[in-house]
Image (cartoon, rainbow, N blue to C red; front, side, top):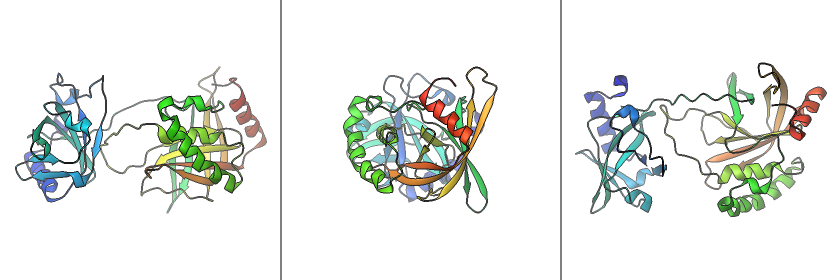
Amino acid sequence: MEQRLLTGIERELVLKYLVDGNVPVTVTPVDETAVDADEIRPLSSEVFSVSIEAANVSVLKEGIILLQNVPSSVSDLTGKVVKVEFYFNRVGLYFTSVMKAVSSGPAIVIPKEIFKIEDAVVEKKYDFSATLYYSNHGEVQFSCVPCDGIELFTRPVWSSIDLPEQQAAKEYLEKFVPLARKNGRAGNGVQLINICNYFVKEKLVLMEAVQGRVKPFDILFVNHERIVLGFEKNDALSLSEGSEYPLNMFFAMKEAPAVVRSVFVTGKIDTIYESSDGTRFAADCHYTSLKEEDCRFLYEKATSTLFI
């Protein structure tokens, strides 16, 4: 798309920005058969992106990016086409170029064409979702959606965690169990399995059109007593232990998908669990207000497949 390409003046401003200050970048190998900017796509057989910290990135005034102390997976891309993504004044930008090797390490020449990252349009239909009402200088709403790879409305089992990740999950569990016992409202603690699973799952590094936007919460667990929400670190949003938040849950009925049942609850956060790298969190909330008929409905949801 023509409007995605930076003008010559914009490119010069971006280049000066890169030269003047260290900027973190994300590097991804791409399909070399894609010749059009709109067709650039990761290699299907080995999709991975690597985030490189600003301290390991320097840019020469000639428009050459030098990388240092990078993992071998990046060095192995020498001679291959890569997609380089970064933020300029919170706007996501990218370009493609061939990674080369110099005496100091990998090097990437910044081409004439730099593009704006556009939001990927992903339409998903959920049988279950929720809205969290967050008050911060006014009423603000945030979407909550089922977390990819975590099954809801079924009793969590340890085998749901991929075998290579179970040791790391066990270390999390050993740390989280005392915290759950301390607050005294963790129930039987089965939600901790999904929380551990959430923290150990490898998350794809995705650059966005605009940096710092609040993403939907991930729903990690829900039953008739509690709901657990996962989220990433974001300075614009902070949930607090001991605070109460209203939530509205929406359920599409299996036998009549057009019929949606709404369940309104108030949840109080007992514990906020944190990943070891401090980038992901899970808020374990128990309900402080819930109608009797809604409690019965949620109990049936969590113990049967009558709905959805």
